[in-house]
Length: 128
Image 1 (tube, rainbow, N blue to C red):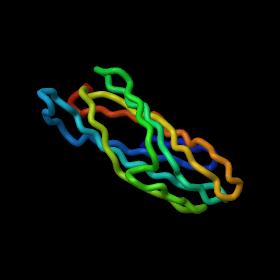
Image 2: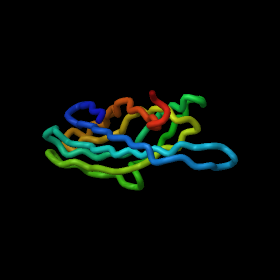
Image 3: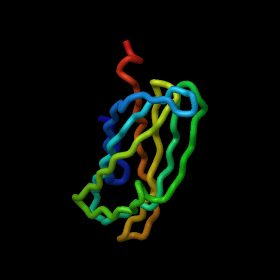
């Protein structure tokens, strides 16, 4: 598990290899990840958007931006957490992701970033 804390918001990430399949005549490697966002601060916060950098060992870096996470903009009260599952397709058996969430603090109305630590993807057969 990979973790990082920014301004009292703890991000924990677990990854898993889901399998391989062909798409558009190319082999693809499917990875899943579970992210838990834990509010250890004294203020309620809301996740408004996300920014990802996806590293595929055989391709260029891909950048993705979007609102919320999996269709939600969760409000996380002090001491509470929000967990979600998502996935990533790579054209190689090794890669990584990192990024940040844009959030708002309801007490101070401050917009701030919460950094998502780099987490790695590797198919079990790719590492010796």
